[in-house]
Length: 474
Image (cartoon, rainbow, N blue to C red; front, side, top):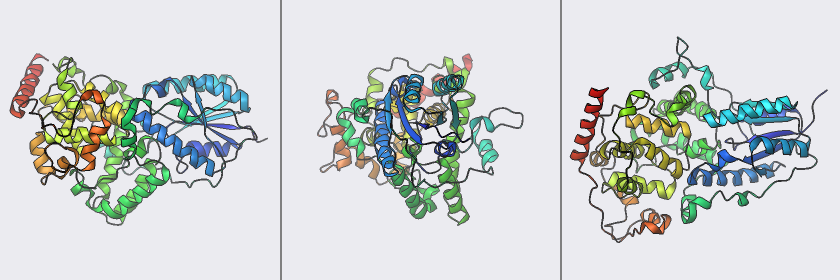
């Protein structure tokens, strides 16, 4: 006989109805579906901006569920204990969720799956967050890929799961288990006064993500490869925050991007390579989780980065280094919760090379400030620039922020967008920074631009000298 007991759909980073294997599995189980979000200890460790953005996504997704005749049940507490409580209240016989891949989540989920099955509760995890499960991509000798290009060549012709439509309705239980108000979780608390400003730059929800992808593939993808490094141009897909919270699937980006490539759009293949770059980050995190917290290349453990950065780190965080590209990017981050990819490379290079500050401090700042924060991509990005990671840019490749600004922002549009000082009529974007930052920083738009924190030649020579000495010692 068919099992008609309720099914708990444990929602984590899959805030969408389309292309959702966990939702599809829940429907196929046969019983009414209980969408459940659990705010456990791991959710509580999220940085200020990621937690805030997740809260916005959950709020929007709750409305989407209501439109389908369902509702989002919100609970706080230990995930296993909460699941057991909801199972007892609802009589549920299944728990289904989309996989996460960071070490803490996989450890938690394995424990939960084992405990539920021991209690005769069906427990199932599905894919959906990635195009390919990380353990399914191996080199010819069964090992991990350490360089992106061979990884790309290995997966580019693989089959990718087909797209699925959103259900018209979700079967509801006869009675709903109790839940908390999402607002009571205080997911916006750490943002303080900056939350209202960052929210203006967030694109929240599945419908908004789908519209953005359509706009990108219709209007901008043809020039994507040529324009993507110019931060003042609207050239990228701007879907990173939606990918981070599962409001769009990488599968949809892949299939529609591949169609654009078949239609002759010249930038489409490069767009697909960027989708797979994210897959590479997860491949690395799964195979070598040390990338999240330690130098991926162990020979970098003795490199003399500053481990007590003090005032220099704060000036970098505040966009007060005296270099326009760096400071504009750091202010863009504080106002929008996002940063252009070229700018991310510039600020990371400046921190780890010109200032000789350990990459972990930059990683932690991004972890707190990015609304599109992703553990694998963040870690790989920082270690790639620092030189300590896989397929890394050589340490001696030190970006000159002034030269990069001249090349990629020749008219100064990006700098003016985010730097108010010295402008007679600064744009709202530049002024918003001073509304968003903590008052204790005591920064004002009528102040003069700060002097450079370090000379570019001086910083470069110091970094290269440290690198040479470190190589000699190792």
